Length: 314
Image (cartoon, rainbow, N blue to C red; front, side):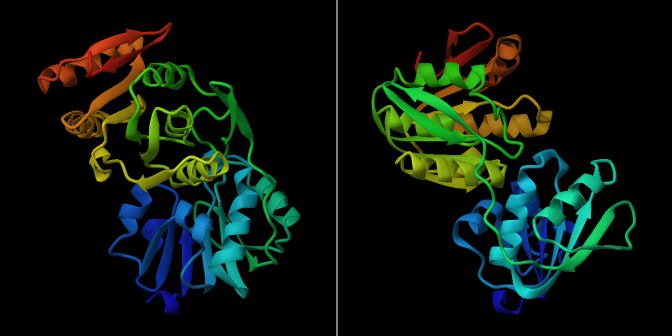
């Protein structure tokens, strides 16, 4: 039961037991924890609404790829929502990711930590300090018509410094669409497509997926800050969302063949119920066009300088 949790585990779903709660950074972590832990929540869920219970212990495996700006957010989340005031917390640091610098940063956040024994990692343990609000996330500006949208884009999410060229092209093409009641954004990241299309009047509201729970937290915050209705799901599966007249996706090229096949199958399933716009790098156009051909879905194209938008409405 949530009220009887022994420990919260972050970033190490495989280490969880039936007495633990898990806060997942990704959809994969959440899937690994289901059936193993008593409670499984996405990072975005806890950061937005808190947790159902506090525990006397926590284990935090620090994700090095998130960057130094994420550590104050982790400290805030653990102390504000997850543990009791006298709780003990273990911080597990990757030996290859500068653990001494991370330890110094934790000390600056009020943690008084000592080393503990562990294999393959640096582990620091100690009592939780009083919660301190983290600094604001780094942000970028997206211009839609005469409106400038400020979007938080930090903590290792895709394209944090500026809206990437593929997303910009897809947004430009999608903004030429007829107005619809809802748009689905598959792999929304921090939300530039979903929020931009609602703010630009193309859609009345947006629904979105991503496999990164931290990105979804930012997307929800960005949507609220800019007054755009958005509902999110942390999932790799496009069909978890309701059918919509318009679906957009900046197809990730770093995933393996099997996950690409599953993603494209889900996108093409959505194309049976509405217009589908996907953007890929121009050098990879033939690779992804084959999925449409195999599914007997006619597709047109909108070419940009380095990317191509594939469009089932043309």
